[in-house]
Each structure stands twice: as C-alpha cells, then as structure tokens.
Amino acid sequence: MRRKSLNTATCPVARSLDVIGDWWTLLIVREAFKGASRFSEFQQGLGLAKNILSSRLRKMLADGILELRPAAAGGSHLEYHLTHKGIQLRLILIALRQWGEDNLFVSGEPMTTFVDSQTGQSLKRLRPIRQDGTEVGFRDLVTKLVVAGEGVD
Image (tube, rainbow, N blue to C red; front, side, top):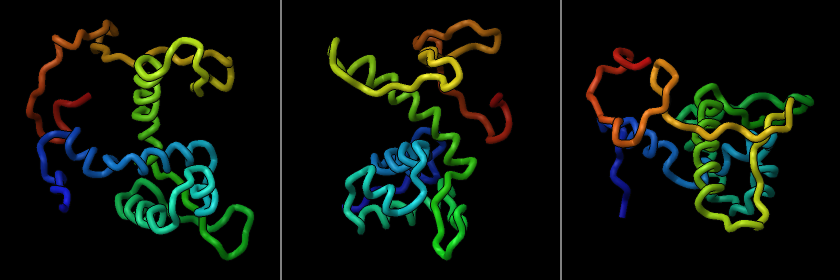
C-alpha cells in the first residue's frame, strides 16, 4: 500500500512528515551531524542495507536535505553534506532526544546526550516560548491558518 502524499496539506507538521517521516531520514541526519559524509560511513553507523540507504540518500538529495560535494581531501568521489534545510533539522533531533531522555529510559540506564562543546553542560529543555520570553502552556496553544511568509515570526 502506497503512502498518501501530504505535500499539499495546510499543516506544516504533515508536510514535514512527508519529507522526514521515515525514521531512517532522521538517523541519517544524526550521522551527518556526527561527521559522516561518505556512503560507507552512513552504512557503518546505521547498519542499514545498501539498497535502503541508497534510496533514502537519493530522496534526501531530491528533498534538499543533503547535497553532494567533491571530497574535501580531493579525489574523484563525492561526499554528502547537510544543506541549510538539513542543518535546521538539528532542533527536531534535540526535541526527539529530550523526549526520549525523559520518557524512554529508566534511572541508571546508560544513554547518550548532547552537551555544549564549549562548557560541557547539558542543554536547557526545549519549550514553547511567547514573544516576551514566558513559557506557553500546552492548553494555551491554538492552530491558526496564515499565509506562508506572513504572520509567522
């Protein structure tokens, strides 16, 4: 059964899931943030079959999440690099990581986490913030239809 495309939905969540809804996409982005740029590095980091990885990388190139660049060390091969669009997915990874840290591990269980490379400190928990800096409760959020590029700060 083919998935229904959500690329014309008025909901940004639906459109986002149309591009990044497959779990391999975000795991490939995670590996790219860890420094992977070659097919073999992604395959080794993920343990993913070559055909599936190849398919996902092609889709991510087509969706503008990754781009191919000549290898930094020279040579004839190309490397995968995150585009600006791909780099913006870091916030999604942080939110997923924090949700997982809070809900999927028991006390004393080992897990990885993000820390600030300059201070070694954990990140503050993500939360919705009003323009004045105060936190917004989940009951205070509503959905509003706006025109893209207008009404969004």
